[in-house]
Image (tube, rainbow, N blue to C red):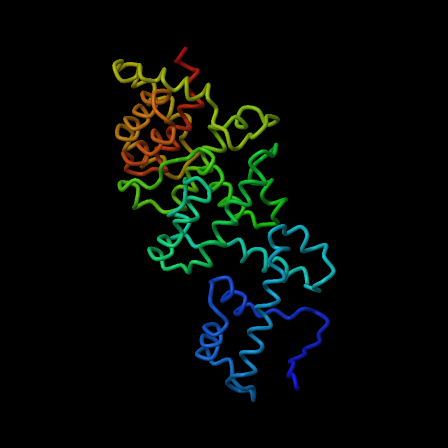
Length: 324
């Protein structure tokens, strides 16, 4: 009985970035080989399709063995099984935790549970992202959420330290964790036009200004839990609806606070009435409805959600000036 073995001995682990991306995207070995051949990888060399298939399969095995280390990226730098240069480790981690914007938009704000994971077949069909890739991305969201939800300290920094992600990707994951924790309702029809980055921007503003940590940087869950007393104080702003003089004073205070501090100042000032009515709607409903519904209403009504958030931030800074 004869057995044929393909043996390849190397010191530094060889990883083809194109093959790695195909693996992440959920391609089978055969499909990956087809993509590589169509890309002309065999042109200019004497390798056969069989050799290409063997090479692709070998790299797939390597990625699968590395995957358990990618679940805890800090371990990747300290392991001895694979000799991977530091710059290549950064690439592996960053790409493994990268996600498709169309996919995250579908699951944003939903509970990261088994029930949601069961619906990924439908999400895959709707978005065009392979089911395998959907599951990887969902598991990454859930893994990051579980690690950082109870940690003390800044959310973005915790994600960076535990998962070794770039600042941009860490901030995106912070937004995902924040929305998942507060169960924001992002799937309403009127919100479909908003992209993930729109929501990520709002999450960044809320984390910086509306969470418990915005007032006390030594509290637990500082970038996850919203400041309840602040939400309660917002209800006091409903007096602006009936008092025109106070409303004019309110506009003056907000404009003074924002002048020279935001590129959107002229647009904000020109559309102040519309934006302000949206903020007042928020203040009038805060405390009476789930905050996720309140913020969904805020985004539905806003002409430019970034302006509304900026104005609302100013309200937080100026509220104590005239509301007791």
